[in-house]
Image (cartoon, rainbow, N blue to C red; front, side, top):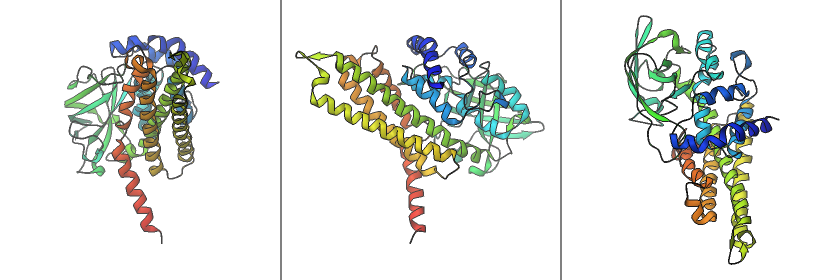
Length: 375
């Protein structure tokens, strides 16, 4: 029922407008409100904080079905940025932040971003430099963030700041209202893909943020970020295998219609074998990601396997979208072809949420640690 509901909504409200949003480089704010009214924006968030209930699996289903209906990973990133901007706040249980930030965001009235990456570093969260100094009932924030999704539209940014000493132990999370004096958001950055998802640099020049907007305890931000990384990485894995499945579906339809030398492409063994390989890679990525997700929700230690799931899905996506473009021939290189958009969009999936190389670092570190503990 959830899949059917998402597909109907996507086909009516999202997919027909996506080309225009891609050209304009942004999704209108009212789309968030429409998605909330459809009962989809708050899926995966508890009802007592303004969400629709359900588990992270339900939220993954929403993202997956939007892509399978003809949407895109960029559309999902822009419309559901709160999936990475709100969980820390919800987990803190802070009544003030839930009322002022969480509820209006889940109602589609406000937009929240997550601000971690900085101009001087991406995956090195423990090395961030944006500093927040306590001054009475406020924190004074100075620094900058880069590549922040939905920043040009965001009302709030859940921001990682340094409140203590160097290293992960000195990091906190502050929710910063973008209307505060001293907050400057750049024009949308020009990107290879995710054209409908606005991305920007955000600068903080002695911004006075009320201390009551601190998320959790001071200097607990690094742990909060690490805890939520699993959800973000699994969601990117879902976007990757869903994109691959969509490109496989489009390719099957294309080769059935396209004729060369008097025969449909699908009649050729070479094409059939390519489709078989594409289907295998999609299914392996989907099956493994879902298995890791279930173990994660069961409370098992899946840090290494989450990294493996993300990389597995990203590689499958890269290979499948590349073959999809090739099977479409010249049409696959045209902007009017949906597979062309997926080809560009898919490139970010091995960068965002922790690069492929960082994921391999995580796997190698944990793998070698386990091997040393065994006889």
